[in-house]
Length: 122
Ligand SMILES: [Zn+2]
Image 1 (spheres, helix red, strand yellow):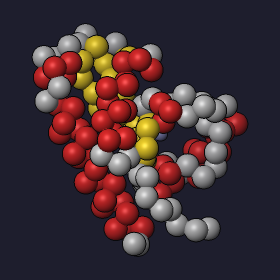
Image 2 (cartoon, helix red, strand yellow):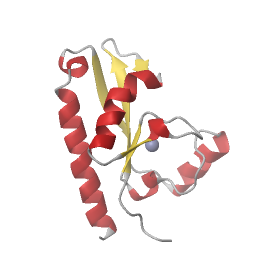
Image 3 (cartoon, protein in one colour):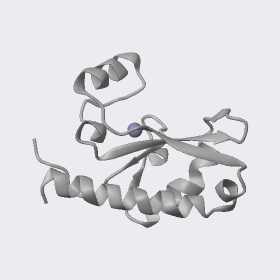
Image 4 (cartoon, helix red, strand yellow):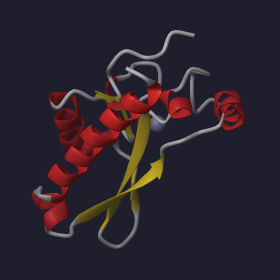
């Protein structure tokens, strides 16, 4: 698959995940909402995140637009940071074939969802 085809497959899976999420009680009731906070990231920005310790890799899937960060918020607009509030979303992401950053041991990144297929060899 070309990069463009993998991006298209990733877009399809994220759309499916988000459509499912809108039907879940926490979102459907308005108790929480979510938005995309990051898809594409430049290498320069990635270097800055590694330097700051908020990322451990210069090989982030965000560089190829094969990752998306979703931020949850409480009804009033307060961002939700605790991993436990993302488990329902992460488990569904994994069920449909995505990788979820909430499983990572190096840095817990529950906001991060990425394409799980084969990545381009460098
Ligand atoms: Zn991310």
